[in-house]
Image (tube, rainbow, N blue to C red; front, top):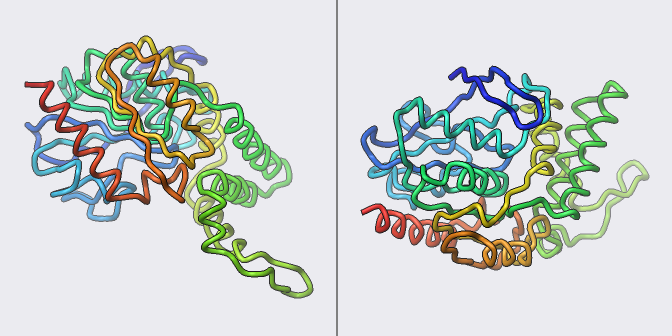
Length: 313
């Protein structure tokens, strides 16, 4: 879908937004958004049966039940690498509002966002709050924490070094390996990789290196350096005034999340402009809990959607 958008840091631009709809055409609409690596294919459906990034929560009989809800997900602006300008969460929120216009949807039942998607959800609620009944923000705050921004700055330096040395894929792979360490926790690595280093051709190699290398290589095979750099920057450019978010909001915090600390989400809930609930969870998966703690996340989503449906009546 081609759109004309006034980007916050780059001015008017013609962009293309690619989205996917699941569920019944006349059902209440739920917007679903994940991390910067998540795209329009949230779950397997009739038109595309391949696995999506959130099959555990989206689909027939799931928490976000496509038998009675219509689900919208998009590819983030910049995800195809064609938009090499600064992008931020406000631009993504405005793109989603324009998609709702094109679909003829005045008001969605809920915006459910996790990680970067939660940041975009907060922006959407602040800028287009009359268009959603409820926001669910999982592991995403009103600003990027300085510690998390430092992690991402190092990742971007890996990519920049790879570009300058003619090793773009290697740079992307290393950036992803750094990212995996920030997404997960020492507790998980202690359980999974508690073995002494082994010597390979006279060089010590720790137990987690094969896992990290696999994550990096898989990521580099499907992403461009431009897309990574611009979307990584987008997280750090994110800022929302919590008082501007007046829709009912459920904030889900993971106590072990090192990228989005519990204290930031407590502050967010205390300063939101509308009714808000904080739902803390414990998980050895840290920031990635929304992708791993299926049962706990499903319970919270079911509860939040029931509240949204009650408010919409």
